[in-house]
Length: 335
Ligand code: AMP
Ligand code: MG
Image (cartoon, rainbow, N blue to C red; front, side, top):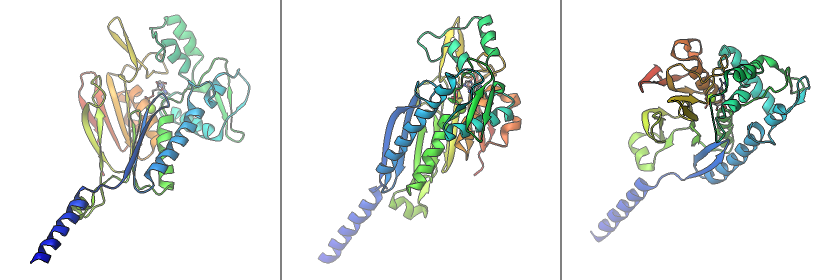
């Protein structure tokens, strides 16, 4: 009888241990790529893998950040016209992808918007509505058609002086993809990354042993909250359940200023040089491809609800919030 009680006690302790024990995880957060980046990995090598991811992200920031004087992009931006500038192969590849996507999006996505963004001063302390003539003049000196990329030599040539590139609408998506690739290489099977609103998930969220015993599964989809525009960061409007893939949002609330009661935000219509005005406050795209998800959310924001159709097949799901704060599932997630 006494032994039975001890055995029962031990059994209870074991069950309690298993029900509370969660698979080990490691998280780190750092300010990179002009935003807050958080990486959480689960499993035995989580800590060393997350450290490796941040090393890689720092490397990518150094290559792609147009606001860093030592970046590969600044090398292109500071170069004169008609001079072939050799760039890092990774930069060359991402630029090639971005230029191809510009065509696919009918010019809604354009990596040469930096001089116009600077004129509006979105990243400065004193943003302002620019003079119309000045804007028209800078617009003439923008446009992807003024860029030539030679894949064989990895070099870029600008047809006009002053043309400047900004990969801000695609680099975070690419970086998220790179981070997931690296984590997989390290043997990590479950992870959650947030690169300033670009979410990447892998393998679902691991369950503890007790939950696994009940459900017969090792993980459940991550629940990703979609930001409510203009509400404090973290205010969730809807949630998306996803085990593997990328969820990227472009919104008019990310970077903006107001003048005479009107909001001017950072996502520009390359045809006008003005902030895209398509009655949308945000567009969220779900995709298996991080780079595409990032480019798509920006392009769909510029195109607006009426002109999204030709890019819809490239998204696994699309959600929008309009000016009246109406949430809409443009394309539902079916997995
Ligand atoms: P995202 O938050 O990914 O939509 O990217 C917005 C950022 O991309 C802006 O802050 C600009 O740096 C840049 N950008 C603005 N308009 C465009 C555009 N039409 N195509 C590509 N990049 C853009
Ligand atoms: Mg984007």
